[in-house]
Structures are given as C-alpha cells and as structure tokens.
Image 1 (cartoon, rainbow, N blue to C red):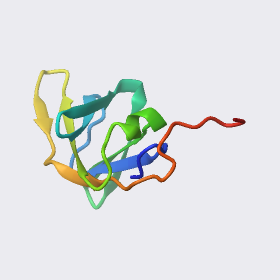
Image 2: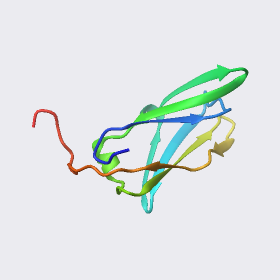
Image 3: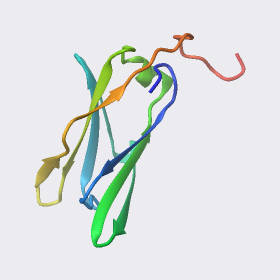
Length: 110
C-alpha cells in the first residue's frame, strides 16, 4: 500500500466460512492501530472442492493510509466471534507501506 492513497485491501481466510460472524480486521504499526468492522468490510465466501474460503475486502481512506509510516510494514490480523461467543483469529501477516511523494490528503477539483 502507498500512504495517502485509498487502497482496496483484500484478505483471504482459508478454510473458514465466516458467514454470520462478527468480523474485525486490525492493522497495526508500532503504537498506531486501525480496526475495520461491520459495514466497512465486504465479506464473501467461495467453496472449492469442499473447502470454503472467506474473502474480506475493505478500503482505507487517504487519512487512514496516512497513519502508517512508509518503509515499514503494517501488521494485519482478522478476528471473529460467533453468535455462541466462540472467538478465533488468523495469523498476523504483513503489508509493506510505500512512500507517496505527495504526502498530503487531496480532493477532487482542488
């Protein structure tokens, strides 16, 4: 991801159908943390050869992507909880953050 942009991030949770669960996606870099949940997330499932994977897609705003310093990775993890109160999480993965030469929020028409 490039900071100060509006990246669409897609994550695949392999072998798990998260339909009907509350899902939280957390991005962290040092003491900076951002969690997306609910309507912020687009969740879909796909079953191939009796294995169901869940794809989670979300968009960061320019301000949200600017939270993270370039040349450092952002850690990302998915947590979910079922209606029965069973909670689980994925392993933590890393997303590289690249530099933007225009390091400010911009608006269309300005």
